[in-house]
Image (cartoon, rainbow over all chains, first blue to last red):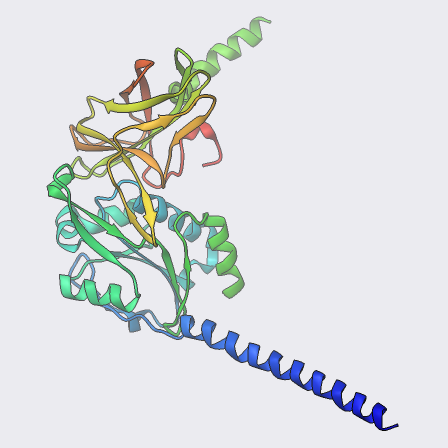
Length: 196
Length: 156
């Protein structure tokens, strides 16, 4: 009889330990996702006409944000093509999504023409190009990297290396996720449709 | 029969972009699907994509030349630790029995110092130089900036 009590007690202890481990695991798992989601990138950058736009202006809309440069022949046109396709395929929901192209090579891009570039992909894409400090601050707030690389063979003697992801910002301004470079338009669209 | 022949001829005439879909052969190499994106003016570099099938022994693409640009180069987009850069490629390996694609996000031709804007619907020649097979010239189809592939692949 006493053995049986002990056995029940021990099994209860096992169950309790299991439950405890489960909750501990849950508590550990949660903060990780929360940390990666709980930041709000901030920027204030002018468009091609010099009109400033800040992150707060886009509250209420989802934003698809890409950092690039208009002299980029491969990565940037490929991603902007995907964005253009997504905007077309969103149909009547397109007004809930604001695509933004933030220049990491603002001086040259303003000179070459920012609007003609973004419009060639989709008229909904808004191009922003600030000064060096504002551009660096914007990239830092997205926790992304860009760098000017001297290259004698490149146009004007330099090229840019940069994080090629496409970032999704929520209507409250929260960073929601990254679509890694090369994510097909259909996948981006499916993901957006679950949110809109 | 006559009708069929006639429609075939009519179709051929009606398909002005078909030239870009034609495969060009050089020894054991088949080169096809050459395409480029339209540019705004001539100040920004353009791009050159192509597909090379190698039915023979190992070879390598060592250079490109075109009257459309004064400085065409082979580049490769490389994403390392989440950062994309675009180093020059001295040559692009074309291993035996494989299909090598110069395609978005990988190897591509970067056409710098354009001699003129590339407009949608235009075509221009690019001469590819291979280490062993020698030289061959293909016609490159210029597609809209937002296109994701050549028109002859369909669906884009």
